[in-house]
Length: 251
Image 1: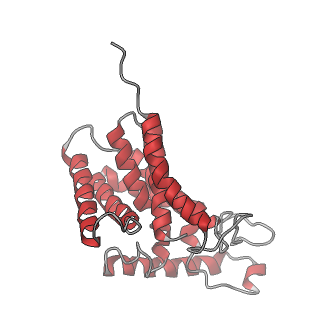
Image 2: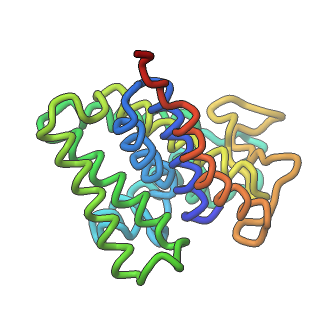
């Protein structure tokens, strides 16, 4: 799917995790914002992707190294059947596996455990995710206005995590939301015709890198289904938040 669709689905998935794990609506909002950014992480294997270009040369270099790692992993773990007609093994391979989603979550949790770490993760994921979502909201002000609003929100969440006691997800929750967001990305790409190696590292029908896709797969960026997922996720989150809000105490 396109980056805006991934980020939108990450909002819903991250918010759902926050709602299940916390009774604080503010923490749920943070989790939704973090989930939006985390839902872009698997595309770090592509230097030209939204996340690959997000921090300039830093993320471009990271993307290049991850792509090389993905290629090496593919060629070292591919079965004989796959090596008979080998693929590139770069984009949509290693970072689009379930183990990679777990690693993304683990890294986020470890970073969140160090001083300033949680605020850094919250700020970075919020800015990346909501910035991507904002690209699809062209009727809501100019590009500069939307970008400024996203940075204010990301900065506010980051500062609250850093300075306001009790406001902000715990390190384990940060890791869980990042893992869920990344998994949402993988499942989103599973819905497309290109598929993802969901079974890796297990062998399925003689292949370890079998690109599995949904029985009703659609073409990325050219389907009403993807539009429906993006719009449905953005509409569904506030509805879910309203329905899941704790009832006011009875006098």
